[in-house]
Every structure is written in C-alpha cells, then in structure tokens.
Length: 116
Length: 112
Image (cartoon, rainbow over all chains, first blue to last red; front, side, top):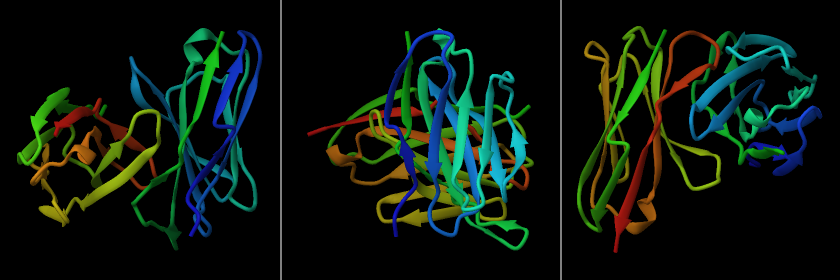
C-alpha cells in the first residue's frame, strides 16, 4: 500500500511570494494534518482536515491556510512568504473509523521550503 | 498548554549497548503517546504507540513504557546498532482529532 506522498519535495521561493504544497494521504485515510519543522521551534502543528473540513488549527498566522478535497488529498498555502517560513513541511494521515481516530499517524517525506 | 520535553538532547553510544530515552509531558490528560524516528532530512516513521490505558508496548528491540500519572515515558532500545542512529521524537495526543504535541527529540548516534 502506498504511503503518504508530498509534492514538491523541494522548493525555493523569494520573500513576498506565495506557495502551495500538496499531500496525498494513504488510501482510505480521511484525516490529514500538517506540521512545520524548524531547527529552532521543532515540530509544530499547523492544522488538520477531515472530510473536507478543518477540524483543528494551530497557532499560526492567517497567511497559512489549507484545504482538503473530496478524495482526501490536501493542500496548504502560504501567502506573502517570510524568511522565517523556511522549514520542512510535513503532512500526516490517519484512519478514522466512525467517530474514532485510529491514532497512528503516518507521515510523508516532507516538502523542504527555502525562502530567500 | 501541553509541553513535551525529551532528555537527553543528544546521545552517543558504542554498538551493542542498551539505552533509554526519556520523554516527559506536563498535562497527564493524554489520549495516547507515540514514539517516532526521523532520519536526516526525512519524514517521521512511527515506532510505537501507547494508549493512555496501557503501561508499555514492545516491537522487536524496542520497548516503550508510559506512566501517565507522573507524565513520563521511556523508550528502551536493546543491543543498539549503527542503523539505529537517528533522531527519536515523542509526541502526545490530548483530544479527539489528530493533533500531536512533539518534544524536541533525542539525536542518537550508535558508533560501530
């Protein structure tokens, strides 16, 4: 069974630009979460989508947004990029059966974003 | 606000040694705790997940314990190998939904 895939794997942007990252969850997984990883702040939760709805949101500015499609694929968008947005962006998917999460989260390889 | 701390930040051991990584969390009202491994520049690989009602989980040479009342978890690695070299992260899940709060990780180096 294919794992979580993220595209692109590497990206270089300049300040002020915007960027869209994509995540395809494991087949059958309906929950997709996004995390930002930086050397200074570690792994921080951005947001979670389930059945095309944002279910949970971390403490990030409104420049960070996301969405989920009917096939559970998710995108996150960062507008007006800042140097501090340089990070590894990871997405994770998990299986939800009925109203219960199946807890184990499976992470993709990440997208490394460099903002110049 | 939940805070997760991992000690030590870095650890270097000779091959074959048994070792323990520590994780502590401030709010004991957790749903579960998960240990991950991360290789340089890569994503996270789930190693073990312990439900809040469990005391430990084992997988091969790995054993994770959970003491929810004291806010602590340990990851025990037996007979370490150079291939175990990686950063080990623990993460707690507090509520329904999938949000995880991570520690800063322990960078492990196993020397041949």
